[in-house]
Each structure stands twice: as structure tokens, then as C-alpha cells.
Image 1 (cartoon, rainbow, N blue to C red):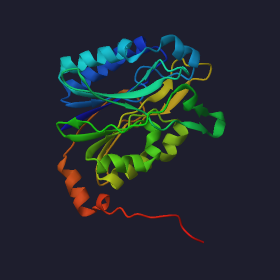
Image 2 (image 1 turned 180 degrees about the vertical axis):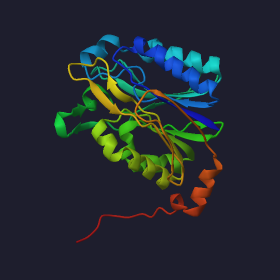
Image 3 (image 1 turned 135 degrees about the horizontal axis):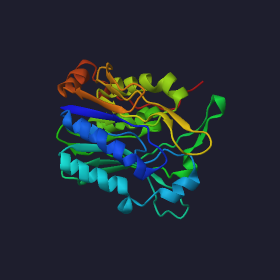
Length: 278
């Protein structure tokens, strides 16, 4: 199968982001991609809750989702919309960070709400409290595709290996990790964590990313790491999207999943354990 990883530098204007996203989807499809993947928060990168309140929509009304579904149908591709920031109607006003798998007919085949919230304080004054603005999800998503089951995750989920093991043991052969990684954590951890998740599960890992300095979003523009990666089940990095917006195309041999799992069948070797004693 041929996959296309779309790397974006989204602003805080969802409608303004659509033309660039559409152009890259068309480029990926023209290059023969059967599965195209976009990053986390494809529709908006903003740390301003006021701006999010102003422009975000419910799923049923979201123009990015509607247009990308149309494009998937027009281009005849499977599309993993890495995630969209969406209103929820929740009483506390929190949003959803929701990933979508769209079929080549434009229909939504699966939804996944990001489970783990990025609540961290980094060196240099960067601080994130995702749980203030977004409500966490609570359910796995592992939909069927022509290439087998696909396990859906988003960004900070990457640091919780039990989630990926659960998806692999549920039958996933492809794992998606659309992201908007910070520069410090991206430089230090992005590649090694993605390679670890691939090795632990014997899955292909596909991780489209946001990159660069994002227009809007407050007095201090946000910067993201980029380097969209594809990793093979044995842990080799197959492609790196670098630091600029664009499309990375690659061909995947799904039989590599079976070969990797036959060489080290660790998914079958779980053992129960309890608390240790001193």
C-alpha cells in the first residue's frame, strides 16, 4: 500500500487553513497514496481559549470536516484526519480533540477522542494545560481498513505504551500518531518514542505532524517540531518529513508486520504480576 503523510503549519484560522490542506491532500492522491494522513489539530493551532471559542464548531457544523470528507470521496482515498478541535456542547465548555477515519466514499468510519491530556511545564517557560480546554476521551478506536485494523491515537498518547499494546493485541497492524509536538520534546523524544511503539507492537507507525511557527494564537506564537515519521515494525525509520509543510509518500509492505511478530512474539508473552515486596 502507498501512504501519504501530510505535514502542515496551521494557523488559528480554520477557514484560512483549508486551501493549503486541500492542496496537500490532492498532491498526496496524485502521487498514488491510498491512505492519506493529516496532523493533530488540522483545523487550528491556537493556545487562545477566546479564539477557540470564537471559531470552533460542533462536529455536525465543522467546515473542515465537511470539506475533507468531500475530498476523500472525490479523490477516492482513505483519509485519517489526525484530529480536529471541536465544540462538544459539554456543560463545562471543554472541547474535543477528535481524530477521524474517513473512507473513500466520504463516510466517517471511526472517531477517536484523544485520551491523554498534555499538562506539562517545560524549561524555557513553555506551559500547557490541555485538560483545561479539552475533555479526554476514554475509548479505543481500532477500525477495519483494506490493509487490516488501524489503531488510532493522538500526540501525547505516544507516552503511554499500554494503549499501543492494547491496540496491537486487539489486532491493529497500523498505528497512527498525528501530532503537534513541541520543539524541546520533539528534539529529545519524538523519534525514539515512535520507534519504541513500533518495536513493542510489531506495527507500522505513521505519525504526520505540525511544523514550524504557527501564525496567530496569542502574543507568543507556538512552534512545533515537524519531522513526520513512518516507522517499520522492526523499528527502522522509513521516512522523515523534515521541518517544512509538504507530503511524504511511502510504500508499506504489510507482510513485515507478520515477520516482525514471528521473530519476537512478545505480544503473546504477557505475564501477570503484582506489587513488589521489600
